[in-house]
Length: 417
Image 1: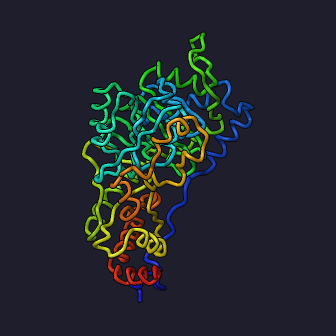
Image 2: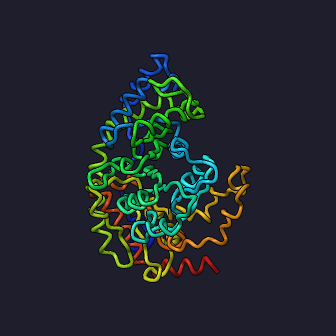
Image 3: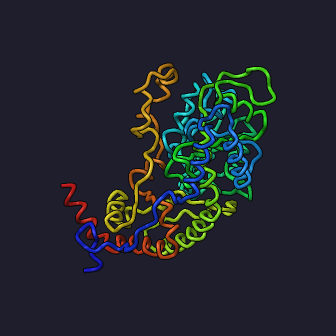
């Protein structure tokens, strides 16, 4: 039977191979070869000419006036906090639903991450939860833009202005995204972007930090470059480390950036089509983009199922979709249950000095917990680069699993005995 679930022995619904990532050709080969021939491979003196050229092109695409490049998109958040003078005893508010780096960065800078819940309509940080978590020690907020959506930057910046807080946008998922015509990462004081292998702009590893002012950019440059003063300065004003990226990474990133505008347009067209198609399947909650999002980018696409309607939770649904040929995952664990975020396994000063701030058993983060335990389904960007056919086959697989949910629930019940 064609309608039998593949996980139960039927034929998979997806008949195409989704495109691989990253896209590359001789442009990347020649860009790297040029660097090799130049003999200037590394990151010192910083920034090198290719790094400078890449950052200028990225700012032309994303917006902003000042940016630095670093080893990866994890340390860029630490760099931002250190450049802003945030450290020992300060508190930094972070969302519960994000990669562990967002919460680890404050600890690396000597600050305390304060984990708050997310908005059920976006899975981004909840502004009301931010407001409730502010204390006299709060110095910064790190909103994370996830799932082709953005945190409510109007509300977050209003909170930051009222309380004199630094805002570091975690933009690892949203290269190209815009809010009211302004690029993600240009609204707060800093915007942190990852160039890791799977990201929609990649150099294998690397990170970009957009800075709102020249003063912040100069401070960030010094943090990256072992404390060396930025060009035009003659005194060391901050202690730094070696967080430099290389000219090889800048060359790769430049070649990839040439493709990003067209890829962004393609994904944006298809993500709207996906929203409409999925909204017709019962028990699926589509996260509609805020109308203030004026350009949408897609690294991961997230929707939610209602387990009461489907008769199973999303773990069973994702396993069934994988068998149908659609790469699907359940997403991030909430930070207080995340096996990659275990401060008690380190001897970093912050968790040792403040163990009570990491009492995860006492934390109550219901929205992030529900997303991870029962409802969130993540799909990769490759679905949208496969055009209408790719989206149609993904939707067909999801609809097939929904229509055969009773058989899936029965099989899941038998496995759990």
